[in-house]
Amino acid sequence: MSTAGRRIGSTVLALAAAITLLSNCSAKVAGTAGPLGQLDPGSAGGIPVNSGASGPRPNVPDATLAVADSDHGEMDRLALNTLSDVDDYWKEQLPKVFGRQFKPASKLTSYDSAGPNLRVCGGREDTAGVVNAFYCDLDNSVSWDRGELLPGLVQSFGPLAVTMVLAHEMGHAVQSQLGPLSGVDNATPSIVLEQQADCYAGAFMRAVAEDKAKHFQMSTGDGLNTVLATTFFVRDQPGHSFKGQSAHGNAFDRVFAFQTGFTDGPKRCAQIDVAEINARITETAFRDDTDAAQNGNVPITTGNLQRMGRTLDQVFGRTGGKPTLSTDKPAPCSDAKATTPTAYCPATDTVSMDLASLKIIGTHTKKGKGIGDFAAFGEVASRYVLSVQKSNNLPLDDANTGLRTACLVGYWGAAMKKGVDDLSLAAGDLDEAVAELLTTNSLIAADVNGKAAASGFSRVEAFRIGFLQGASTCMQKFD
Image 1 (tube, helix red, strand yellow):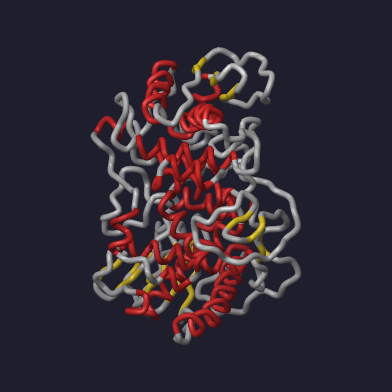
Image 2 (cartoon, rainbow, N blue to C red):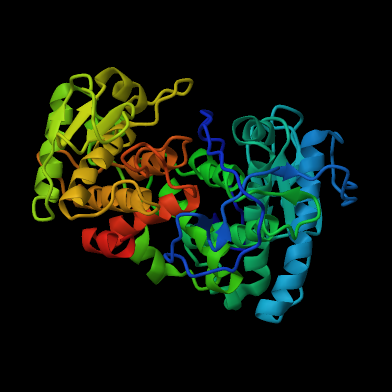
């Protein structure tokens, strides 16, 4: 948040449900950054999608940074190695990009949120019960909770989740040192500060992906997707406003900021300002008390699936394709493989749905496999838009089909902002889209046979392109 003389980056332990992530295979190859929006189904920000080890490098000496109140355990080693690599990155990039020398954090403090209270941030902040990590510009310090926050991140998403979170906090240090060069001051809204910090973290994580970090490595397949999925863990909870005093952004917006830094680099991060935020931020409040009580979700029922089908008919009526929707088990299909929990058969122009399986996906619980209603509806929409593509003589199983499908589902999502047939986009829906797009077998970004686009990074961006630019862009961009 931003108050007079203090800037703290906050990382809230918001969601404990882990997401099953992607797995890809190819050789690790360096790439060239390209502007966000120039997509290749086999690359992530210009780097070919690859598999391989992601996380701490083996047999590398640990960093020797000084830290207060450490227990010298694994969480603190992970944190200190991260901060050492981040320091190395900014020592090179700040002079190169901004003509300024970088000053590492003056004080590092590890604490246990369930342990004795410490006073940090120049004595202004307590640590007892604070499940958080934060930067303080009063004394150029970084503090983190080794007791709950860092272990929770590692358990749900692996060690690189900690790396991303602390890279974000050091993004605030970069802001503090750049000041006007990053366009910030004590009056800058929290959402601008946090989106810039996400962007700076993305710039650093690209260096990790390019094998330029001493202590960490990251594949652009499952490794990068894990990092992206972490945004679902540390996002603002549904119903928050981006104009709030401590707003960070929903997962959809935080992923965009991260991807911007990953593809375009630190200079672009410094250009994120109030005008840009007002133009692109999607974080919204709940419509009413009923919507809030349901956390923005509606039940996955036959009736609601039928209503959703009518929205698809209305949204895509002029673009061709109006398949039959059926909740019966899919009949044998002569020209496509069966996918679950919903499938499209080109020969019969039919979308079949498994109601029980869709209910599991559409009902989010902390310990369950569900994501939320938009994930379930989005998967059905993905099979519907295959019919739209078929009617426009587009291939249903080529390299671009998955991204084109995600793009068209994004277009449908944007149309739902105003509501169609009493269904409308709710707070949290776009985050559910991000979560689904980063799953192993994402249908929202899959071809007719269920083969998903290789890059989760590109899947999310394709969805966003459809959401912001419309169906015609989807058809032209991914032809």
